[in-house]
Length: 151
Image (cartoon, rainbow, N blue to C red; front, side, top):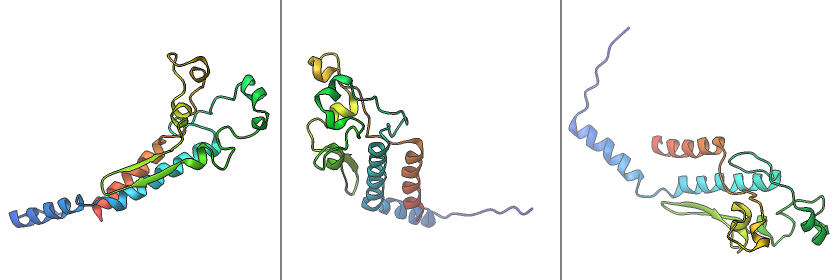
């Protein structure tokens, strides 16, 4: 077994710290990868009708709703129309941010569910979470950051 001692001079340390600092000038590449991970998790949630963060299945559509919307019987819940919620999901990123969302005004209520202070119709909408990350997705995000920093 050999013991080694590394000597780091002030110049070496300054050089390493400068390289690390330079990486923080523009995080566009890892942010783009992170946005893609979020988008993939959301697409999977719609396809599987499950929460991306917990894996729990979405609540079934109510009998009353199905009576009023018979085309939804036996079909997918939030993915039916080409101009609907699933199709409206978009990911974006920049130098220091990554995001995913929808331009549909009803997107939030489907993701978070209704609340008791809402009118009876919206208040009864159960949470069908489609935004979020599983623990595997979270590890993927950390891997993106780690790989970027170590590159």
